[in-house]
Every structure is written in C-alpha cells, then in structure tokens.
Length: 270
Image (cartoon, rainbow, N blue to C red; front, top):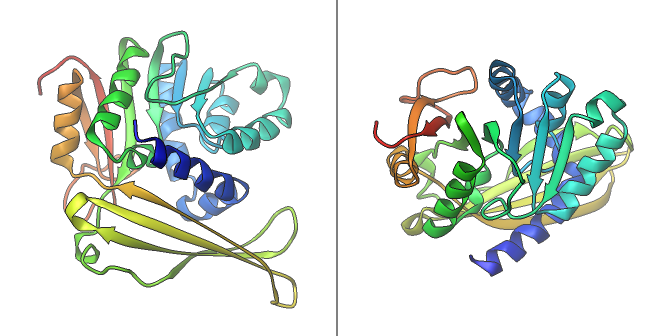
C-alpha cells in the first residue's frame, strides 16, 4: 500500500470534513442518495458502505429503514458521522454499525446483500494493487447473490491537456451553523501520462459584510478511470458486470455521460 498517499488523504479529509455534507448537498442535489436508496430498498439490506465518510449517504438509507454498516478510515470524517448519528432517533441509531478501518483490508465481520462505495471512493487508489485489494475485500463481504455498486466520474477528455486548469468556484452557500457565506474554489492539475490529477480546494468564509474572516485549503492526488480498465479490474477479481450506468437516473452509459456507475455480482465472464 502507498503509505505516503494514505497520509495525504488523511490530512485532506481532516480539512474537508466540516464542509463536506453541505458542500455536496448543493453539488449533487441528493441524486446519488436517491439512487443508492432505491438499490438498498430493492435488496432489503443489510448494506455495507465502504468509505462512508460523514454519513452523507449512509444516514438517509438508515432513516429509510435499511440496516447499514459503515466502514471508514478517516477519523475526522467518522467523528462528523458519529456526531450526526447522536442526533438521530434511537430507531435510526439501532440500524447503524460503524467500523474504522482501511476498506482495502478491514473485515466488517459479516456479509452483506449489497456493498456500495458512493462518492468516487475508487479515485483515491492510485495504484493497480490498491484497486484490486479493495475489490477483493468487497468480494469477501458479499453474501450469496449480493451485488457491489460504486460510482466514479467520467473524465472530460477535452480538459485533460489544460494543466493547470483555472480555479473554478463550484460552491457558494450559507453555512447552516454560523450563517456565514462559504465559497469553495477548486482546480485540477493533471498528469495525463499517469491518469492522475491533483485536486486543490480552497474555502473562503465571509461575514455578513462580505469580509473574509477565514480561509482553508487542501489538496490530494486522485486517479481517473476508463470503462475498459474498470471492466478488466472487475473481471480479474471475479466479478461480472450486470449494469453500467452513465448517471444516477440509471441512464445507460454512453457519449456525454457524466459518471460511470457500475453494478457487479460474483461470477466471472460477461
């Protein structure tokens, strides 16, 4: 395992944890939550979320009556989740189990009808052996007849040669706790030859008068994927793809698709 990248990831998540839920509520508008809820309700649970983070997906599924087990390596993200879980009714808390650990190797102690990895989790694994280790661990956690479902973004190849990209403001919201304006700026610096990019984020917090009162920044290296290599990785780890969607509306993957969303079951071949 690449320990240096693990340390960088941990530092990155320590910075973004307080911003994560409200930033992505605006960016995704709940589309991925609704998608994973449909899958969870169809299978009936239990569901393992690998890389559950702050519980942005896990908690809505638990509220919907699904037994959830979250696995996460970042203590900062788990602390956010536990604080949110403490505010939930006992009926929701009783449906949630949490394990802190590396999703490439940690054993949750049971098997699941559905294993999910929302939020581009796979992009954090830069090397092939890390990607295969995660898939192998997901396979070990699947019950008979179970399915693995995860999402990654679809690269915009027109932008890959523009390095560094300009800073783009992708979040502009009011913090629900402080009432202050929060703006997030981001850019990606690509290393096309290695299918990876450094994502840089900067948060600017402003008071009612529009004066900047705080700024924070974080960066991390990520990797992007093509459909062909995902198909090969899954086949190597004993999976068979049953669905390949291009959006959380379950549209087939094709030209112009913004995402790659994969559903796979155990059993090699196509």
